[in-house]
Amino acid sequence: MQADTWAKEELSPIRDKVYRYIKGMILNGELVAGERIVERELADKLNISRTPIREALFRLESQGFVKTLPRKGVVVSKMTTEEIVEIFTILSSLESLSVKLAANKVIEEDKIQLADQIKEIEKLLERTDLDTKHLTDLHIDVNETIYKMARSPRLYEMLHSLLEYIQAFATVGQEVPGRLRKSLEEHRAIALAVQNGDSELAEHLAKIHIANSKAAYLEALQMQP
Image 1: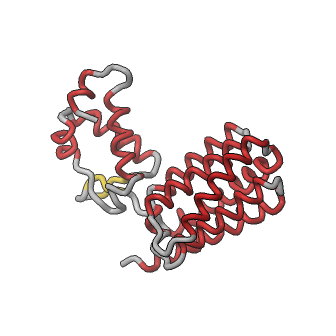
Image 2 (image 1 turned 45 degrees about the vertical axis):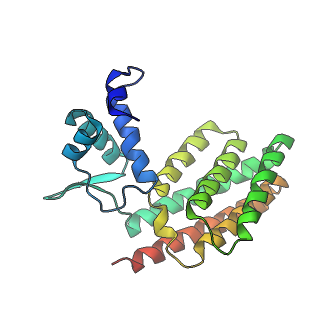
C-alpha cells in the first residue's frame, strides 16, 4: 500500500490503515517478538505524521501485540509462561466446543470443502521438507473452515481473536523439533472426525491438539535465551 494513496483515500481513517499495516507485519513475522517499533521511522517510511502511528500502537498495545518498555519504547510483545497457559486453557474449551458443534451440524457442502483440505494436508505430509508459510496458512484455513461450520458467530469471533494473537507468536511453537508435522497430523485427524460427523471424537482430538500445542509453546519458551 503506497503512502500517497493513504493520504488521499477516505474510505477509512489513516490510523486504521496504519493499525492493519503494523499488525500485518507482526502476524506475518516481519516484526518479531522483542523488536522495537520506532514511530519516527514508520512515519518516514509511510510518509505520514506520527499521530496515527501512535494511535495504532496504542490500540495494538491494548490487544497485547506490543508493549511499552522504559528506556526502550514500543516493542513487539513476547508471550510469557502465564500467558501461554491462560490462552491455551481458554482455547481448549472454545475449540473443543467449536469442533463438536461443527461435527453435529456438518452438511454435504462442508464435507466437500474439508475433503479438499484433507487432501492438501496429506500431500504436505508426504514431503520430507515442510514449507512453514504454506503450513501455517493451511492451519489457518482448516481452523477457519471448521469454526464457520459450527455456525456460531460469537464463538467464531472469540476463537478468531485468540488464534490471531497466537499467530503472532507462531514461530515460537514451531521451534520444537517435529512439532510442525505432528500438528499437521492432528489437524487432519480433527478434520476427518468433523467430516464424518463424529462430534465426540472431534472434541477429544481438539483437546489433545491444544494440549500438545501448549506443551510445544512452553518447551520452546524454555529453549529461548
